[in-house]
Length: 345
Ligand code: KG4
Ligand code: ZN
Image (cartoon, rainbow, N blue to C red; front, side):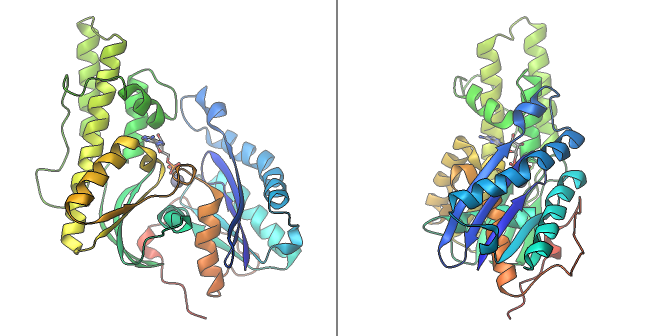
C-alpha cells in the first residue's frame, strides 16, 4: 500500500510517500521558519496561508521524486491534531479533497504518534515494548509503548514543554525563533563550569517534568549579568550552556527512572528537541550504564515532517481504519492516550 502523508500542524509543510512493501519512496519539506522569524514566533494565520501556497506543489514534487503519479496513491494520511486549527484544516481539506477525487481511503493521524513512530523509518527500528521520550515545542512526555496505539502515559510536563523552554531561553538571550538550535549552537562556546542551573523535580520521585522554574532561573541569571555590566558574548554562551546542561540532565534522569520503573531496555527519543546533540550524548551515557539502548529518528525526521505521518497513517490504514466520507478532522487538543490499537482486519 502506497500512502501519501501530509503534515501541516504548525510551521512546516511536510509531504511524503511511504510504501508498506518498499519503505519511504520520497519526502519533501517546506519550513516557514524564515517567515515567522520576523515576529519572534509562529503567526497562525500566516502559517495557514503558507501551507495553502506550498502543499500542492510539494505533493507534485514528492510524486515526481518517486516517479509516480496521483493514480499510484492507494491511501492518504494527514495530521489531524494536535496543532493550530487553521493550519491543520489546510492539510485535512486537501487530503479529503484528493481522497474523494482519487477514490482512496483517507485518515487523520495524531501528530505525536507520528513523532513516536518516526524511528521505525530507520534501518534498525526498535522492537516493542519501549519507553518513549517525546520532546517537542508543545509536548514533553514519557510514554510506555507496548504496540502501535497501546500508549500509557508515565509522566509529562506540568507546565512548559522542553522545546518551549528552549525557545523562551533563546528570547532572553536575544536569539531568533526557533530557539532550540540557536541556544544549542551558542552553548557550544559556553563554559560548563561557570554557572549551574537547577534540575527541576529530579529530587523527588515521579516522572513528571516542570520547566517554568528553570525559565525564571535563566531570566534571573541574565538580568544579574546585565546589571553587573557583564552580559557579553561569553556570558551569553555560558548561560546557554548552563541551561542546556540542566534540560538535558533533567530529561536523562527521568528517562533512567522510566527504564528502571518499567524494566524495559529500549528508549525511543523523538520530537524537535531530540535533535539536540548534548541531550543525545547524555542519553547514550545513561542508557549504556543500564545496559539499555536508545533509538532516534534521523536528523530531519526529529522535527515535523511528512514521512512520520505517512508511516503512522499506513499502519492504521492497512488495518482498515479510515475517516468516514467527508468527515475531516482538525483538533487543537487530542490526548494521546485516547488512541487505540489499530483494529486487525
Ligand atoms: O517537533 P517539533 O518540530 O514541533 C512541534 O511539534 O512542536 O519541535 C520544535 C521544537 C522547538 O521548540 C525547537 O526549538 C526545538 O524543537 N528544537 C531544539 C533543537 N532543534 C529543534 N531544541 C533543542 N536543541 C535542538 N537542536
Ligand atoms: Zn512536532
